[in-house]
Image 1 (tube, rainbow, N blue to C red):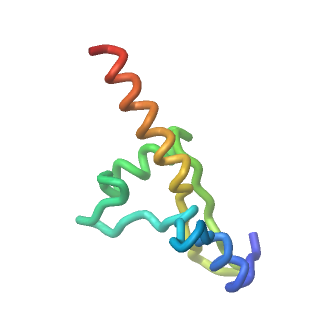
Image 2: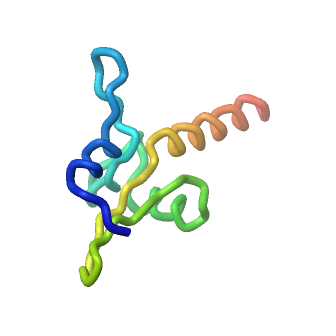
Length: 88
């Protein structure tokens, strides 16, 4: 998938009122967290298709950029909280 830098920036952040809302985020670096979850846990969620993720690459490039849909991650977290509430 080829995407221009300005289009990637627009896809990465959307403005909501006076505050920028991140729609997409890179996985956290080792030792850091995203929404309280570690890098390895987020990659397990990606593998199980529990959260949406895309990889942006340029033709001929060996590496790309992995982005995670923050709304899908928050939806998954809310579902986990609801399941716990229902079981209590």
